[in-house]
Amino acid sequence: MNDDAKPLIQLSDVWKVYNLGEVKVEALRGVCLTIESGEYVALMGPSGSGKSTLMNMLGCLDRPTEGSYLLDGEDATSMSRNGRARLRNRRIGFVFQNFNLLARTSAVENVELPLLYARGVSASQRRHRAVEALKQVGLGDRLHHHPGQLSGGQQQRVAVARALVNDPAILMADEPTGNLDSKTSREVIQLLRTLNEESGITIILVTHDQDIGRHAKRILVLHDGQIVEDTTDFGTALRSLHRDEDHLVVPPPHTPAQGAKRPEGTSKPMG
Image (tube, rainbow, N blue to C red; front, side):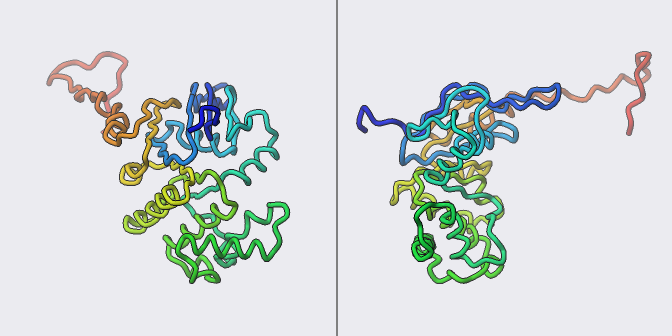
């Protein structure tokens, strides 16, 4: 890589704090992260670790409380809501667990939707690009099928095509196989891997599924709003994922000796 080339993503000391009345929740705590173009990264961690908050930050769906975020050299931190929306539309495609397809709209019309917000794209160009995106994910023969006429895996492929139609630099997938069976999950993950390896699209994936995470080339493990492991070795990531469980010691239940008096002020345990 050219020494002067900028990373695709650069987070510097990013904090995200939610004020819930008198309580402050630190969802991200001083996160620093660099992702180069063409990487395939999985964000993993227990529930509440901050991985979805980090995904929202990387996807310009939210902005940090403190710190900076550069996306392909552009400062997303200081942008207005509309500015972030334009940046998302140009640079990022999203895939979600629930597909988010319009039920009464055909596959090709669902894929066209992001192009309605793109300037200078005619109706014929929208249709052509949508058709090509569906062909890219293996659904060239399902253009006019509605979501109800498609399997779960096919619906997720439509969602991937919709994410690709703007030719994004980054594809962000939030639990993309959460509603799919294991066989279909493998097919969708293979599709993402192919897009990464053959088209050079940067993939950023949030998952709790170890079988899905192991396909990534780089794994970031989050705990309590911080990246605690950044590795290309899945075994190392797995050990980090389970570190809290390994150190968790559950004390045996305390049973007073027979005939012993219970201290005053304590109530009898409920059965």
